[in-house]
Amino acid sequence: MKINLKECKDYLHVTDNSAECSAKSIFLVTDQNAAYQESAKQNGCMKFISAKECLSLFEIEKNIKIIGITGTNGKTTTAAAIYSILLDLGKKVALQGTRGYFINEQKIEDKSLTTPPILETINHLKLAVEEGCEYFVMEVSSHAIAQNRIDGLTFALKILTNITQDHLDFHKTFDAYVEVKSRFFNDETPKLINKDESKIRFNRTNCLTYGVENPSTYKILAYSLNDGISAAIAKIEKVYDFESPLHGFFNLYNLLCAISAVDMLGIASMEEICVAVENFGGVEGRMEVVSSTPLVIVDFAHTPDGIEKVLDSMKDKDIIVVFGAGGDRDKTKRPKMGLMAQRFAKKIVVTSDNPRSENPDHIINEILSGMRENEFLFVEADRYKAIQKALEMQMDNEVVMILGKGDETTQEIMGQKFPFDDRAVVREILVHKLK
Image 1 (cartoon, rainbow, N blue to C red):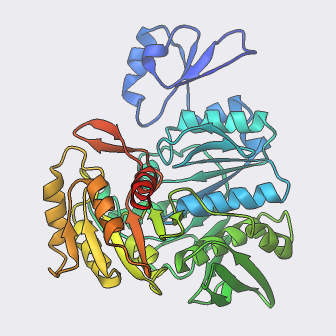
Image 2: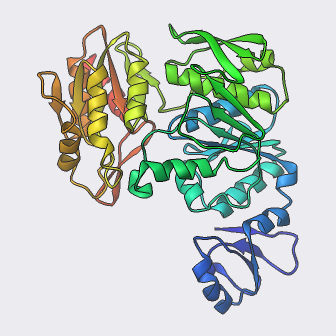
Image 3: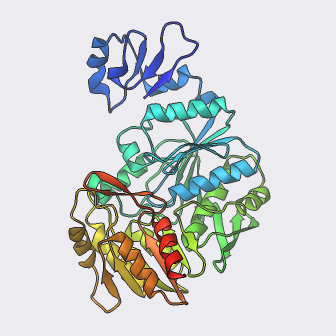
């Protein structure tokens, strides 16, 4: 990755790749590439800078406010909701996260890492500033915190959605995972914390809270989840109402978080923010209705907590769920995912997700170890056939929920990515089914 320096006589670009270095290069030193400084020198590079110095070089942070969101679930939807509200309020804003990079309603780049290497983030910030953006909304992954991929950034607001089990293949223990998340909140930066999340540790200076169950700065007083979301929020002694077409109790949290965050920025009244949130239609691959008749929903849920939340949101219907678990990832969550699916779903088809280098049958067996056998539990390793089976046995009063991959367009098997989109598969099968 490199960023060109158009008006600099002494240097051509900033790079984090020693192989791109020359006497005209500035080398950005990070925890990931520190060992390659000597290689950069051998290629002629003589100037080395930190991420903070790089941000100053491009005069970025004085011109834009960075909003960082971390949490196991809800980061993508909450970030997108904040982005949508800010746009509706007439602000220029950029969004960086799992779904890609966006500036002022335009998609600039396709999806990559939730939080990319710091030089890529700096480049995104630079582009946002050049487009006149006042705000930069970004998802912050636990990997990025642990690997110091956000070092040097100054946040105007830090947000926590929740903490549940995930990424133990990387963090090894849940306590270590919580410690990494907590590290993001140990300074005096303005913070917005989910008060119903008891596991997080944070510096209480400049901290406000939001919640449904516990007393908080922004508190849900009443809500309805019928045909979307309608709710009343109490902020100190005032009460505000909002409505949304989104479904699910977990989206009540996501929207409450987004409304609270924008209010903390002090750019509009709560009334205006609550009106703006109604225009947010959700995120592709997150509780995405692929078909209304029959009802088929695709979601990214890939943890026990994520599965619980999305299935619970449709508990008024008979659920057929199709899901698997990713290979080369936390294995301890697999039986828990199976157990959670069986708590809510009437019929279950266990299948393959992104098996990566693992044997799909082995992953499926680990999921099944947390489940009890019955006549409504089916196994089909071929994901296409699994979706087909669910749609073929669907009755009029049932909803098919396909979990794990969301808006992904490939399936990763043995180092190769093959075209596969749950939504496209559903539409293809339904076309033939309904003929």
